[in-house]
Length: 177
Image (cartoon, rainbow, N blue to C red):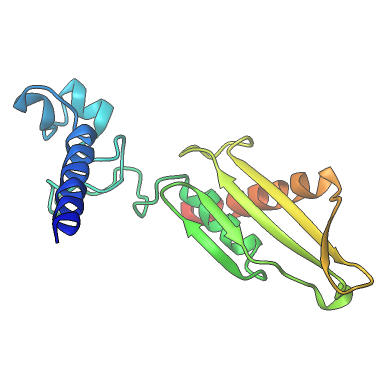
């Protein structure tokens, strides 16, 4: 019983320490960013994640995103375009705040002995040519039926990035009409 009690106490202290370390120190007035003309509001935007958008726990829905976004932490056109471009592949993970999309392995009908996996990284809130990175992975079956890594043409990732950027431009043009 003593070991369990000690474990519970140590766990509680560790979690409390992590929570307290995650909080920024400072005066109470430094922690409230509800005045849009305040310099700190421009820097942190009233959001616990900083900048425009994000999750604002103190606002209760009164502060709408200024860029017309959907609360996504990255450029919404690049995010939507990335999802549209790789829609034929099964998703393993999609993090709209971190800008990471990871697919599961996909094997096209034409080439059953090989499969592909894609990781897409959206690097910011601006719609820029260098705002998206795509990594493509390939595996092939060997004679025993096991999957082994295979080399992917470096152009494949660049072509995927170009397709995403083209779709993002189409979405941006369609939204302005």
